Image 1 (cartoon, helix red, strand yellow):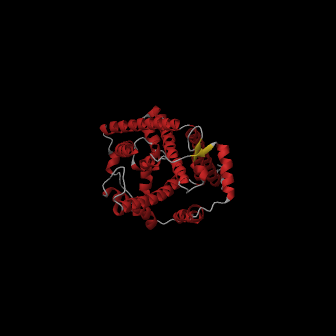
Image 2 (cartoon, rainbow, N blue to C red; image 1 turned 120 degrees about the vertical axis):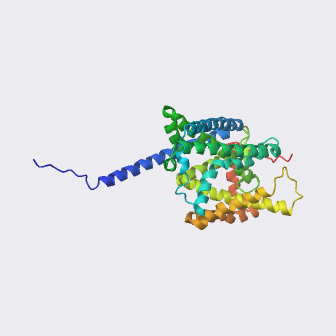
Image 3 (cartoon, rainbow, N blue to C red; image 1 turned 135 degrees about the vertical axis):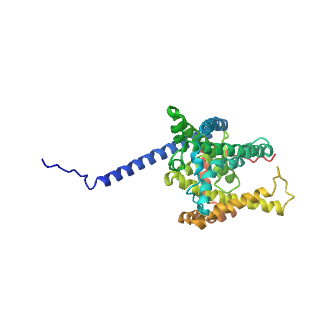
Length: 365
């Protein structure tokens, strides 16, 4: 009998690739819907009560620290067993271009970005001239040492290629080290992400609130709820902007572009600080730091802004810069010369009644 040879239909590979693409799109939709649900939940929490928001922050921060300690202890156990192979070629194949290093800093510094969030809520702190420096001096070294030990633990459990190819490094570490308890890492990553988002949301809403109170944004954003005393309009505005960013982008691009904008403004802020420190030393200051510290931060900010542009320019960066400077079009008529159309006052009045908010006064004590 003659054997029949079977071959795959010519369109089978096409169908397979289309199926993978559909699966990827479905996964992306699920991830974005989950992120949107978390943002809406955080909006409700922060609009209801300030103490509730801070309690959520404290609880999830404690859960995150516990997970990191588990990873650190697990890494120390692996090192004690002699698993040090990954450290022998850990930097093999490293891309040392100035632009690549700058983008790598964007991703790495994202983990440390909480250092600036406390500055946004100094008005709500007790004795900020004491609390703020103390929190920064304790938190940054603690986080640096902890994350360093966590990365050592990752390299003890995984090869550099596994580390780079992993979509969630902590989850991959849990699969390799914790066995049947690996689900704890997935839960910890989710809790950590939610808690971190709550902290950023809490402080980001205050930025809009203060900007509006200074006349740089619509008046409705400078108001607080009459009973709950939370800046709910500013928090809702922040939520809407976050949802738009989720729809239009992915995590990597959002981190890179946000970091570019953030370090651009960090650099301008530090430049203003140095100017005041040199030109107006008589101004009162709540606390003082050596001038070398802002100089180092300014140098880092200049590098992080210019390095990716010089080494690997992208058209998206031009869009970002154009978007930033487009604010000048609105600044002069609306902020500088205060030419407010009448319909804005009507909209503000209706929103004020609907949201049950009222203007706040600045505490001058």
